[in-house]
Amino acid sequence: MASPHDFRVKGTDKFLYALAKVETPFELKTINYGKDAQKARVLAEKLGLKVKFIDKVPHEKMNELYWEADLVLGSFGVGQLDTVAIEAMACGRPVIQHIKSEYYSKCPLEKLNSIVNCTNLIENFLINKKEVRKRVELQYNYVKSNHAATVLVNKLAEIYKIYYC
Image (cartoon, rainbow, N blue to C red; front, top):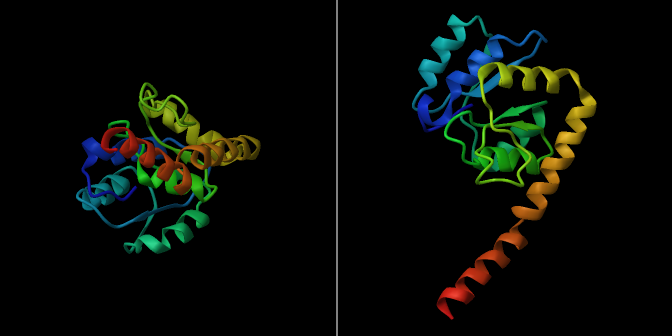
């Protein structure tokens, strides 16, 4: 949930409200970083959430943090596809993140319509291992076919070939 952006952009507050309604026991870990880190800490405490705030992790070590997670919460904000979501999916972790499906029609993430909708997704992925395996496979295949280095290089080569050659 760490972000250099505020609640309006990242939507951390919405995730905290959703997590407060989850009935299945869970451990919440987040990086103590970002514009609204202190506000997130205060809100989590107000909502009765026990959060383990950890130090900022160097980018080259983020994969280890993803691998420790049973579920990664990306962004519940403006609806773009964040780097966190792509990286976590590439590490084989299930991700919940709000996206605008009109821009990412092939991406196996949802448009989160409400906090209740988000709570239900979190709850489902905490208890339904079959759904988690299905989600991981869909998300990993999406990243492999759309965000792998070779795919991106080929897309860039086409753009530059079309416009600059």
